Image 1 (cartoon, rainbow, N blue to C red):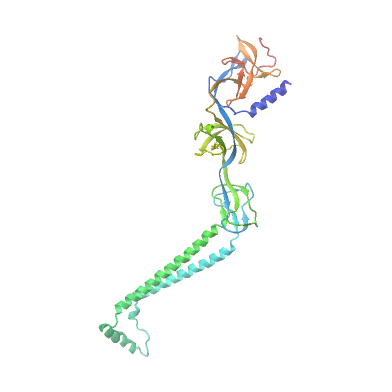
Image 2 (cartoon, rainbow, N blue to C red):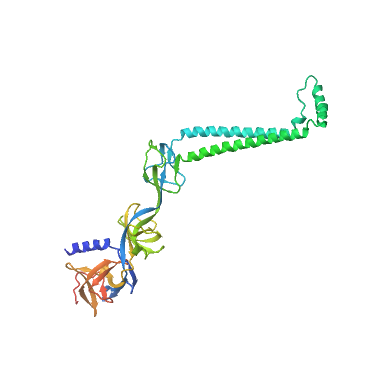
Length: 385
């Protein structure tokens, strides 16, 4: 019967480990040897007020990828748990129609480039070989055209009826306008192509950072509309606890503070760091959302229940005696310890409290502090001998 009670109490103590944190210890728990026994002093621990707040484990960062365009899903990177690197395509929507429009836009860019090259050629031709000086339309041996070039135009210019210089300037200006128009046409064609490329990016959802697929909202073949969620993607190499802390408790927290925490995954207590305290409280629940960073490699995952022990300044600090767990003996239904008095062991019944962060057990009554207790006393040990 004693063994069953010892096992039950041991399991109870393990389940509550880390619920209360101790302040400065009066002296060390290092075991000593006295009269052939391993001994340790009864400690006096200063216990402050604390409260346990429930929370949820969340990823370090998480995004929901939504559809930007209507269409049919033709590709998914993988199932839940699929790990993807930054830039990897996670979801692809059918873009066959837009790809055809892109090929037409590329053809328009080529045409605009050819038109620009031709306009530059015509401008250079006018610049180095003006049409006003050109002899064209030679009939026979070209004598009439030659006379027209040297005599008729000369007399016309001298009489003020024409101005070859002004005509050349007008022709050169017209070719320059042609260059500007061709350049604008090329810019417009390139902008159209860039617009199509930007729209094509909306047909695929890529990973913005390294992470895993948390949840799929669609399957291959589904038809989606803009705004529909596609995939939840998260970075979970680092985990956090998000908890709604009452305002009176949140007042005792500050960023960077370390507090005890426990996850529902069955692992032991860990130290969580206060990462973020929301500046505004919930007006209905009167709580403040606080995020706690968990150590790297903490056993658990997003969505798990977690508990955080936060200090409660409204509860005064009090002294509490404690002994190592190895000092407790169970004879009958009550816990006891062997105290050395004048070199002889004396059995003393105690009332135990809760496990402390340093592994010792608080003692509510039966010890006053400063006594020496025997560790792992043999079953044959008798009080007074």
